[in-house]
Image (tube, rainbow, N blue to C red; front, side, top):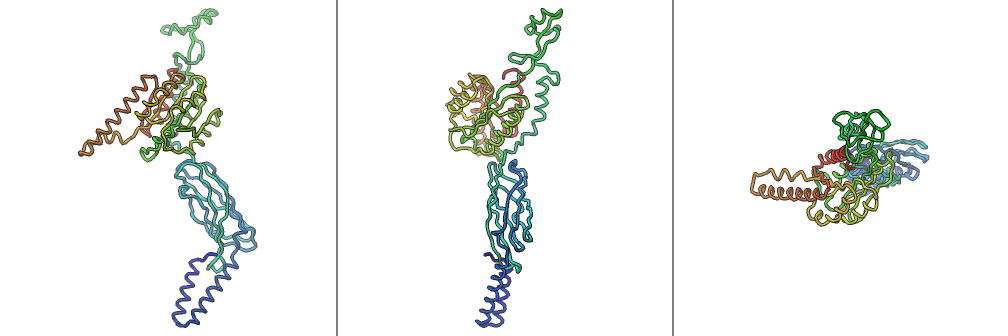
Length: 429
């Protein structure tokens, strides 16, 4: 049983009557009348047990973007239902409206719309649907929590999507659709054409030229149908927040742009998320489903407060990819961890082309430029030292033929995409 504000108002009026008469009999009479009205209202209120609720609508939403959930309420009882319905979701779902007023005759139903604007990634399960049925007098009623199972998976926002059109245009040029033929070691054969003065004689196809009166040369195009393995480090360094988001979220945004670009290029794309154990794995998916699968798996990833196991990372990649491919390791350029795991990284780069992408802290440059006070000078010295250490680690990795992309969260996605396109243009994949 529940009481409404109207019942409290009637109780106040009863108290005024009691004060006017000032007798115990008046108090008993007022209480009896109030209790009788409440009892009648509860008896006449439609039973929430005869109410059926079901949810439908969006099962996947982007972080920060609105989605809709339909809540169907059906009154299967014999009385008119006048109720307040609350569609329960956790606070991070940011559900609106919080409550809805419904009036349903017997045997009728209604569909309510709840808008979710989630503020956290992951799976969000719908909570209980609370139906508060009120009697005809509006003094009291009945309340019951009903279940309507529904789960929404909140996906990464993919803010770097805005960089995709420009990179796809460059990819089309590399692929020959704009007649931009590229020669180089390791590229795919495209066609034969007549030799002109200035062409590389090493490209002459002597076998084909022997059958023709002209000298023919081979033209080449960037290699397609290659394999890319994206490795997300979900260790403790990925929990650091830069510009309002974690390093893991920034890495995922860059990885999504790279995956979308690679899929359009026809390259096979796999994903591994690992720290001390493998947290997620997307392998062997077709071109039309790989990006959706990667996005769905990323939605469930959270940083783990453990150091990454570079030995496990190297073993997992080597066990997954037998032939040479591009391995993109999204991790922090921490001098201590990189130096300690350098042997594992070298063994990985011996079998595959390794590219390390790292999220740089935007505060480092700000601190390095500030000289306004004594404390700021000390902070600037620390920032310069940290920046020099990252540069030293990057130089060390490049000496072992490991490419490095170190950029801020906003700059990392396009920088990583450009590095991938440069590798394809040079025929190094």
